[in-house]
Length: 464
Image 1: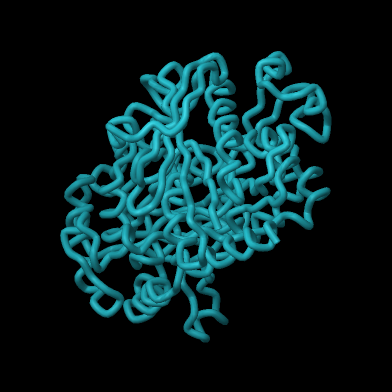
Image 2: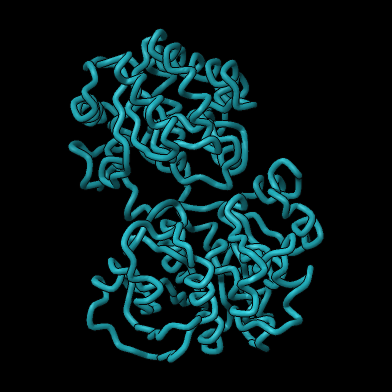
């Protein structure tokens, strides 16, 4: 089976978040199940450098008013296609947030639909690729299609004035097409046009049918619920493995947790923290309302008062960045903050911190808690989406059964999060119990084995 996977980023070529990790890992996850995945991504400058000299396999003299070429290369052992359109993608600054993002990602989607004739199925990831199933549908394409929602909060909504430039027929302008509240909705179009919809965890698939989580698309999800599938993300053990991770000063296994101490010392030094054996928390996150960072910042005094320390790596809303920096000044030696993102440093934090805080108000799947589980960095998470699906709360029943892997809390509030932090500190004070929780998480299987099989089964059912 030949599948075209279309996305705006893919690890290790280009990454801003978990989407890239998922898209990068899928080809290897699907290969054992008879699926050959070709990944199509935009030709950003960093991607162009990585595939320099790649073969040109197709040309468009006018793709959304731009000349474009399709380059054939490889991403690891798997086929890669790069949409080389300098006028659209050779930009300075971030991948997103440009005034013509609608044109840039409509071009990606149109190119995907054009080449989908060579594949059995097209798999579009998030709003940036979500017009591809609509182009297939209205262009008479024969390939089946899947749209995956990685985060329904990001929808790609634009004004109605762009519709004439999309190259879609008039029939596409309607409630069952690309029209969305009087404008054009890229994600909405993909959800309406695809043969199947997937989300990145079973709980999130149920949550987005509700007003609180559906972000205006809950009615559409409910109407197509028979085609909605929740398949939890996995992690790539070739990249995230404390036994082989080159970013760690000291590698270790579940049987040799004492070796983590060297990594803890390295984290303390890098973040200017006092050395000690008390609980070291970490945050590796976007600093935004969705991630619950506004609540966490108010819990920091209590975290320190309970003997905890914090090493934070992230960026986001300027007021939140400043609030964490101010807290680090107030608690010098107890709280350390790095604004930005650093991939090797994120590995070190997972391998050296004792617990990772993820108080998200909603979290479609989340990969950070999966990395934490694999590294013995105990997750402290809100009970939502993929966090609820992947972390077993250390309540009395779970502890008695010996299956707990972390700590969950309910509403994202000061009281609830503070209580979860207190529970974590108490458990940490009991070394045998803490090691059991760590080992339970490290021994769980969050590889792509099962998720890859479920995606392959879904593809086969659509084609059949």
